[in-house]
Figure 1: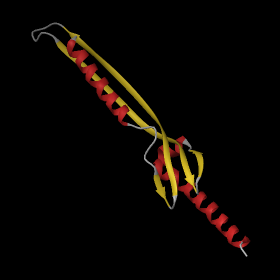
Figure 2: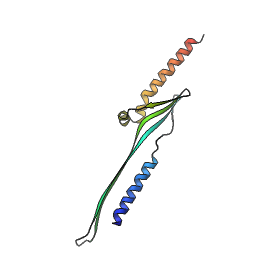
Figure 3: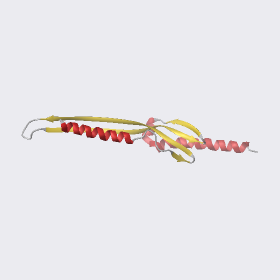
Figure 4: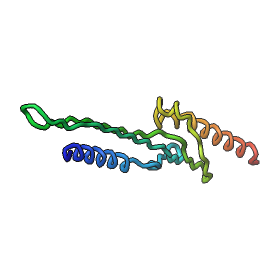
Length: 127
């Protein structure tokens, strides 16, 4: 039984290490003066099975298997644009397919358009 417990303990510790190394918020990304902070969901799964069998000429046999998975999916972005804070939700399926960069691109394009429109409006109102 101790071999099974050792395998279970090792796998659980490795899964815990992987999960704790993941962070819900990432380092800020600055693109064209826009600061973006990704906020993600971290999911963790763990499975284990095994048996110890006595018998035969070879004595005790231990058979075991274990597995774990840790995944991170972007959920939203905190964006700082011209000193204003905005929280932007991300379509989870889209983020899984395209990743963080793919999810950010459309948002950055919208920010750039808004910034350009504000700048043009300001210039038009300046005598």
